[in-house]
Image (cartoon, rainbow, N blue to C red; front, side):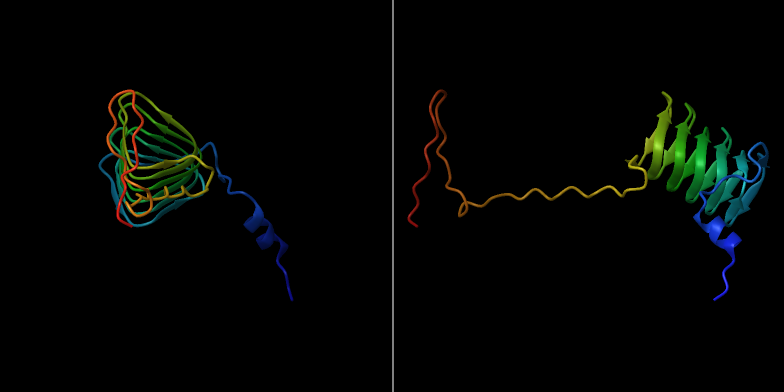
Length: 161
């Protein structure tokens, strides 16, 4: 009956950082456990255990450790991440990066020396289809073949069927 156009408008707009030039920083020696949400950029040089939602850029510094899933606009990883990363634009793994988890991103840059263990989907949000299992045929579906000598064509084996 009543409609709040501002609420509808913000729900349909793409997520953009509120303060793109500012960085929230979790310094080395700081440890956070729980969910982290930010409308701007975040730099982690300490430890975070939990889910991270950043509407801007996430930077994990060389001493930074993240144990949990990450959702962000873009990201530069120099430290360690153990968890899934969903990056809307560019994910950059620097030479010192260690990533153990699956990646969903549009663009991926990996410098020599970076370590990545997991699966990567660059389909823009489309899930990767599982490969179809290989179906082996049985002898009843196809006749067996005799081994042929070089230059000869194999002959089917005659069975008593």
